[in-house]
Length: 134
Image (cartoon, rainbow, N blue to C red):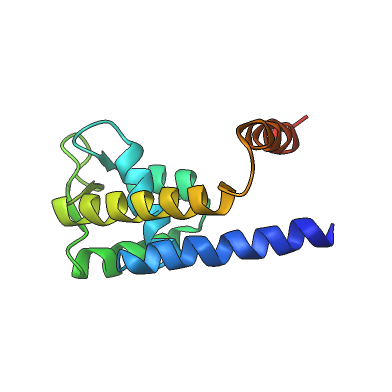
């Protein structure tokens, strides 16, 4: 297990560096990426974001406040529920997520470059098997 822990730590640092290069913290990336995965116009309710990111309501409110102040998300009244809002990814937010993803993909490819194509395929298959719930 210590090897898995070392690899996990190495990948965590790699992810944090990739996000930082785009001016994002990991938690910011998680929220923005959830919005980016939503169908255009890339907006979700706070409840949907809570479900997608698995954090609590108070934490999500705080995160959305911070992201809104930075111009990475916009909030607008929900068209069918006046008590609720929808959170939309701004162009700046989308650019930051894309930059982070591109950097992360490059860095992951660099990490895997020491493995042959066959070894990479085997690793992917083993990780998929380990990540699949029983």
